[in-house]
Structure formats: structure tokens, C-alpha cells
Length: 278
Image (cartoon, rainbow, N blue to C red; front, side):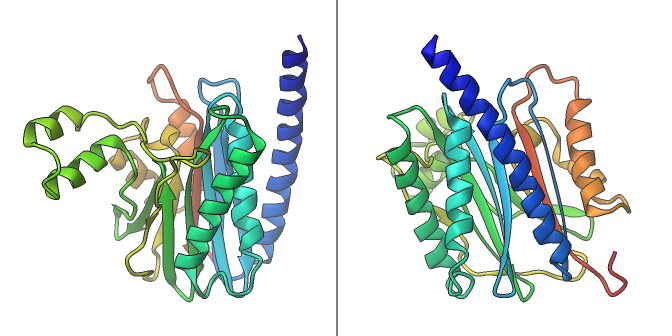
């Protein structure tokens, strides 16, 4: 009974914090003049929302971060991850050294989850981008996705840390046979997450991507891309609507999908405003 009461109290506290956090992010975005950002999420078939997201502006740069929690207290792990990234982004040098910032934030979040939760009680993937002076820097741990919509095409930026991706790399490097690789290609389980002693290195940009006029940056959790086809997302992003409306349309399309099981779904969308501010 005590465990049930603690879980109810924890869930209520997380819900309140989620509302407060969303209000805080909207205040930040309303003050941002250069970019328009939309955010939307949905529980899907689950009872608890374990996706957590945040936006932070500092030193002329924008940080967008999405954490996808898993486990008994995955929502706690996700919140700890986002809060850690946002807190460390307050450092004035964070956007000047994106690679160092991403590695520092990921390792700090990993330690914070381990120190807060008991072993295997909670873990989290994370996808984060920094945009500054039309340059896009990114990092990823786990299996969320980062993409850029350009000229009608949604182009993947991140690769993802899943078993099938690991197998392809291992085959290319001559570490496993073709037969072993083929056996693993349908395994889309994530092999690297925050919140474990075995946490490995992060996926990180080789060089920043220069954003062109009308480029749209999209960050999404598994509940989006495991339900929607790539062409579905391209059709949504081609609509002449506000960025927030596009984010809402992602979620509405996921909700209307006939797929039976749906994971937590979250999408963050960012686009540089044009001269008339639309």
C-alpha cells in the first residue's frame, strides 16, 4: 500500500511540474524573435507520460531537448535528464563548445539518474539540438530521431543507437558476419541509455549543419515515428500552418492511426521566422 501511495504522490508531482515546465517554456519562446517553436505530446496507450521536453535560450542560442523515459520511474529519469541539460546550458560557454556541452550534460544526467533511482528503476533516451547563427548542432542517446524538413523532404540527421544500427556498424568494421548482421537487422531495441553504469558514448554531430531558409527542425520520440510513415510526416510539414499547429497535427494524426498499441508520442518543431514573422 505504501508503494502505491508513493507512486500516486510521485505521479501527481510530475504532472504539476510538467504543467509548470510547459508554461515556463512558452514564456521563453514568446520572448524569442528569430525562431518559431511548436511542442506537443500524447500519452498513447500508456497510463504515464514518460516523455519530457524543454527549451532554453541563452547567449543567442536555443537548446531543445527531448527525453524518452523507460522503466518503473522512467518519467523521473526523463525529467532529470531535461533539467540537467537546461541547467548546464545556463553556462555562457555552452553554445560556444557544443560537443563538450553535450558530453558533459549526458554524463551528468546519467550520474544524476543513477544517484536518484535504484538500479533499473528508470532510464532515459535523449535527443537534443542547439541552434545558433543558423547552425544546427545535435546529440542523441537511444532511439529518438532528429530530422530537417527541406524542400518537401524530411531528412534524417541522427542515426539512432539501436541494435540494428550497431549491427550495421559492426559488419562494416568486420566485427560480425553477414549472417549475424541479417539476424539483427530487425532488432530496433535501443542499446544505450542514460541511467546505467554501462552507459556508452553519445551520438554527436561530426560538423554542424547549416540551416537554409525555410528549413524546419523536427525532434520526435518513438511514439511518433513508430506510428507515422515518413511520407505522412512530410505531408504534415508541407501544410501552410503555424509551427504549433503542425506539432498538434502530428499528435492528431498519431491519435487517429488504426495502430493498436501507441507509445508516448512527443514532437518538437522549430523553424526560423521569415521577414514577415510567419
